[in-house]
Image (cartoon, rainbow, N blue to C red):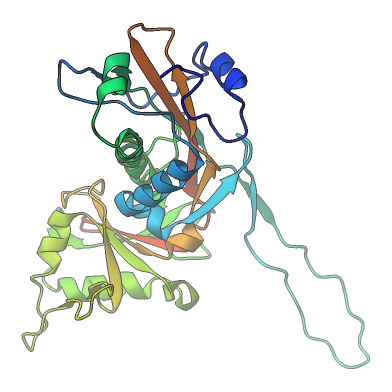
Length: 333
């Protein structure tokens, strides 16, 4: 089968597609995947059409846990800005015939999520593409989805914000309450013991829940890794009941103190001064800005006899509302 006969990306003619394959566009700084040949037993696939791009998004939501609970917006350019008001619009009381003096104007803060470019660059021999007895489209979608999810999942939690999203754990933190902390600073509550829970861990978890204002608790979730969750699932109340409530129906998540728990393996283990547990409404507190489509280039020229498939996706993220996410710090104070 000739190159012209292979599927083209949506909106592109075969001639335009071949011209695009002459070289790579800008690369990010995240991922690489090795070459695939018939000798090694691995496989390659066709360039990804629009239908497979939707499949990648579905897999990402299932693999990257923060994506499933955060506010995900589609953008058409590299830059994205969001305005947030920090104090609302002040008001006042007046008698029926009294003057109405001017009140203060609301204060705005501009949020610009740091962005980076995820990339994957698998390759396959032309012989493998011609002879492979497997679904190459499904293979390519799965490979890209797994690698992209692995990288972005870590970035949403602890990303530095340099050429990648800024994770919520890398935001500034303080023990002060809402209305006192500087904008963008997350509040943490101490566990009471360095590197461990205090004598009454259930009470500390309740304090963490109640530190979040009522409107944000609607739709809030716990976020922690599996090791931390294993510790918490063993906690019991004074009457011997587990604080963890297992799910009794398919599709209904298990709960902790009435709130679902999201397992994110990129969260740190319990250790001295570790921010190992997060609780909050991530849809209100964390934003993910991404380009609407995954870009795929098929390049059969640069690395003969291999065909390179270069996939890129621009993704950004940061905390947008520092009152909507609370952290537990495993420290004395």
